[in-house]
Image 1 (cartoon, rainbow, N blue to C red):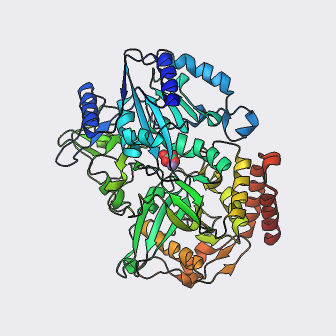
Image 2: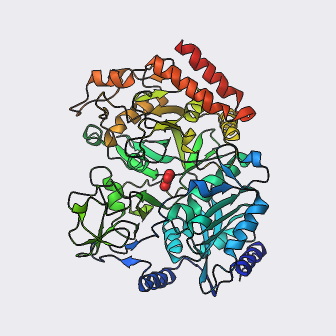
Image 3: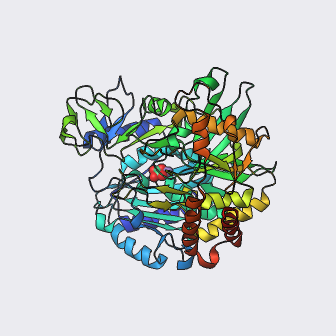
Amino acid sequence: MFKNTNLENWVNEMITLTNPQKVVLIDGSESQLDELRRETVASGELLKLNEEKLPGCYLHRTAKNDVARVEHRTFICSRNKEDAGPTNNWMDPAEAYQKLGKLFKGSMASKTMYIIPYSMGAIGSQFSKIGVELTDSIYVVLNMNIMTRIGQKVLDQLGDSNDFVRGLHSKAQLDEENRFICHFPEDNTIWSVNSGYGGNVLLGKKCFALRIASYLGKNEGWFAEHMLILGIENPKGEVKYICAAFPSACGKTNLAMLIPPEIYGKKGYKVWCVGDDIAWLRIGEDGRLWAVNPENGFFGVAPGTNVKSNPNALEATKKDTIFTNVAYNVDDGTVWWEGLDKNPPKNAIDWTGEKWDAASGVKGAHPNSRFTAPSRNCPCLSPEFENPKGVPISAIVFGGRRAKTAPLVYQSFDWDHGVFVGSIMASETTAAASGKVGVVRRDPMAMLPFCGYHMGDYFAHWIEMGKKIANPPKIFNVNWFRTDDDGNFVWPGYGDNMRVLMWILDRCEGKAEAVETPIGYEPKPEDIELGGLDDVNLDTIKNLLEIDPSLWKSEAEGIREFYSKFGDKLPKELLKELDGLEKRLS
Ligand code: OXD
Ligand code: MN
């Protein structure tokens, strides 16, 4: 089937293992994809939506037990257990191949195996990496077609090379007890079985572009990060780029596509989205850090997306989009989710496929329901999106959801301190997420579930890279989620977050002053633009920038405890930063 003997041998081996009735190579042509769409509509796997209102759009419902990523069933299968580190589940690779091999054995009998060659990143870019996913799910094929670049052109680019990530996926019986997502970083291999949910089965995304790629990045001297990339264009037409990492549910997609507040908009400022979830970063010839978004689409959370929170994302879902686990409006063949608007459909089917009455109080869309939308649909997609060289990064922003501890924004003293700031990232649980409010969950660089190796080595990689980047981006931390005594958010968030990003860019260009505090540099309150904000004044900003030393002292204790997990692998530079913080606080 393939001239590339590495590919040929591996595919044949997997065919022998899974025993499909038929094997189809995905060439990426519209005619082939259309045929597959027709097939899934006929089988009921996809539901065609209203062609006038939502052209090229489909709805899919997963099994009820298969609606999210399964971190407890996600494994890093490195030869040495120690290389997976204390924050990953580990399985011995020989054991994993054997255990999953049994589950894959004959799993595609009476089914078709689809071979999807795909590129993470623009085909031919020096940033890009190639993968091949073998799957028995047309839903996976159609989603991969949106999220990545697929087809014959990828095989042409691969040529005879053995440098591709080998992905095997089978829905098998969708058996929860035997659901496994296994990564073999030393073999460039991913095996995923018994799931049909996006994050577990679109192997280009979290599995390859973060877990495998972070491992490759460590060995090859680059970064694979859980970061959005956005550009801010000034009225002179100059664009500066920012990467930002936040844990899930902190509004990454919203920030990536933000609409500038009027005060900036009318002056001619624009915001461009390069990516909303993953960034691959390399050192450029000019000594700066350059970033690409390896993806080609958005796999966004639907609930809460609306004309106010994210009009650009909403617009992106208006055509050629696959919706998963949202509610269906029977009367006009469109979709609905909680937080879209105040008019839930009267005649509706919920995400489980049952007749649904909004008044019942039961949710129509699953809270983790998704849209898979092509990047090209996004009205503010950066003109540099396809640039094989990527975009130069001026600032790296970390953030979390903290009610009191973290101020609105602060800048690290230098690179090593910035790595420290990223390593102590944390979010507090909200009432909605669990019974306990305010439990601190540490999520360094938002990579805890996505780092394909020992997190202590990951920190060391960040420190080492800092020595190699001649003109490094400046590093900041933001917190949009400070609350008042009644638990209300103080900062308006959404588009107004641009006001903080503008101070960040001014700092990068040496245009703004700062105040030194024990945790880093803070803005002078008057340097945050407040024009056009009704409920925020200078005092509000002073409040948002206040640092409570007693809270930070207990924070430092929490960090020390968290750091102790990493033992000898924790870079001494980070311990030094922690000591420094404690000293400045006392
Ligand atoms: C995602 C996540 O789906 O981070 O992007 O959970
Ligand atoms: Mn993510």
